[in-house]
Length: 144
Image (cartoon, rainbow, N blue to C red):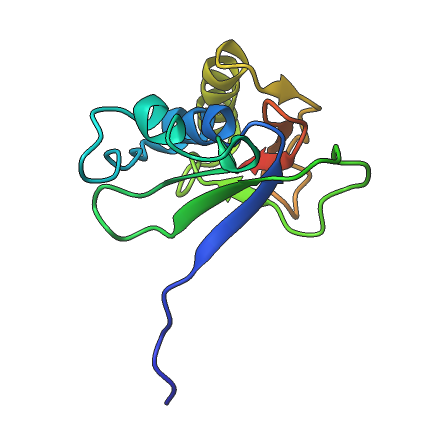
């Protein structure tokens, strides 16, 4: 049996630190401390050549269980639908009205952080409810 491998999820974006801090709030992740010898990330970035400043940022699950998220600056905006997206699991084990209430409460919290509510997909007898959303740069994700 092959060993389970650790992985990180990489995001292409315009503003890596801003998007990373959004996802920290969504998932309860934490940003890493600045590199040794620097009091802040801003101080560290100030030592880099202009083209490398604010080029990336990362965050991780403080428990060490979830994958690391890595955000890298790219010059272009997102133009097509994501081929991969995150499902933020807030309704696991819940069904019906109880599940929908948990999803709607999380949707309201994330909209306050800058996310966009795309639509609410209601339970249909085969699938439970879920809420497709977009993060602060338009990347799709779902509250599930």
